[in-house]
Image (tube, rainbow, N blue to C red):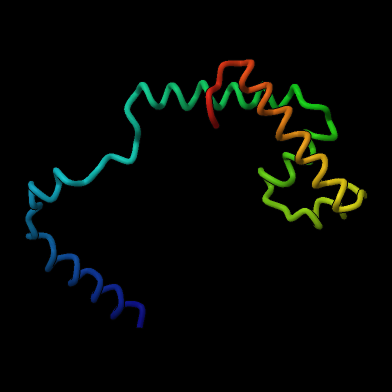
Amino acid sequence: MLAIARNKVYSAFRRHTDAQLDEHFAATIEDPAGDPESELDNKDRSAAVRHCLTSLSPAHREIIDLVYYHEMSVEDVAEIVGIPASTVKTRMHYARNRLAELLKDSGVASV
C-alpha cells in the first residue's frame, strides 16, 4: 500500500514539473518581511517594551505576563496567583496605565 501511495506522489510531481511561473503573478506576491527601516523600528520598540515591563512592580509584571503573554483568563490567573479575580482586573488596570506612562517617557508613541 505504501509503495502504491509513494508511486502516485512521484507521478503527480512529474506531471507538474513543466508548469511555468507566471511573471505577472509573481510580481504581485508581497514579501511578508518588512523593509529594513520598519524591522529596526519594530526591534527598537520591542526592546523598549521589554525594558518598561522590567520597570513594573513584580505583582503587576506577573499579571501582565500571565494574561498577555501566556494568554490566560482572569479567572485562571486569579487561581494561579491566589487572589480574587477583581484584584487581577485592578492590577491589570494599574499595570497597563503604568506601562503606558513608561512607554511614553521612553519615547514610544504607540504600541
